[in-house]
Image (cartoon, rainbow, N blue to C red; front, side, top):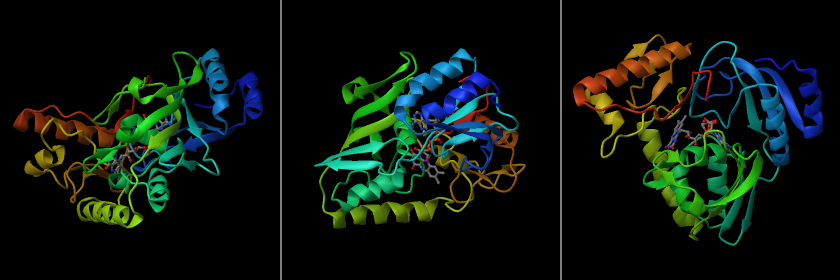
Length: 305
Ligand SMILES: Cc1cc2nc3c(=O)[nH]c(=O)nc-3n(C[C@H](O)[C@H](O)[C@H](O)COP(=O)(O)OP(=O)(O)OC[C@H]3O[C@@H](n4cnc5c(N)ncnc54)[C@H](O)[C@@H]3O)c2cc1C
């Protein structure tokens, strides 16, 4: 979508919002798939309520993009603009065992920043790409831990109220790859309370997790991590592997040879190829294992959220 309303375009600089015209989402997502649209880069959290009000007033649909590492985006001219938080110069601040982190901060860098100051707990998240905001939205986790366990407060733009607010942890539920945030809430910052641990112990945990990832995941290929959530008590990857589907492909969309729940873009995969692969694998699992797999990757394939 190309923004053309002169009133809206004229209002952006005063809000500190920069417009990147015709941004390619293929270039901004780890799968390397997706069409183009105008991207609005937000430098000040305080600008969001007014920006969203302007977009809504103009009937312009929008979506929020973090690091783009858990997304499958449709091709062509996209029917919504994309909002994106600019990285802050200093995006993590510590007070004792509490870390105040901007939502645009890189997740991995936040984990190592805290680790070097003897704050642990998030070792399992090393190697999970993307932003703190994206991790909060999905309650990212791995190797038995999840980010939600350490959240004390979240500052967010609440779309329903049209304003920025702070939510305490008792008002938020974090479940397996699911949170109680509304689909159009936008996370702005988080307060994490982390356990004190010697850096050497944290580093050992980080090394173990890194090793496990390197041994089992196609880290040098374009993917969005696990395509499906694990059903209760089972592993989606093992079920797909048991069907002999590693290497199974639709066009350039392929089930990884290394990890059957990672689907990769092996060249010029289109969104339709990846969707067809997802559907075909899901159908085979349903028929043989009797389980309906739910996608973990977020699909930006429909016009509406
Ligand atoms: C190689 C690889 C390994 C991975 N391993 C793991 C793993 O072990 N565990 C795991 O949980 N995930 C894993 N992932 C998936 C992904 O990295 C995480 O889900 C990550 O937290 C997504 O963050 P992001 O900033 O990239 O979000 P995006 O992909 O940009 O967005 C994902 C969703 O979150 C929303 N979102 C993003 N930022 C915000 C915000 N500030 N406010 C509101 N909504 C927001 C978007 O609108 C979208 O709906 C992996 C991905 C890859 C490529």
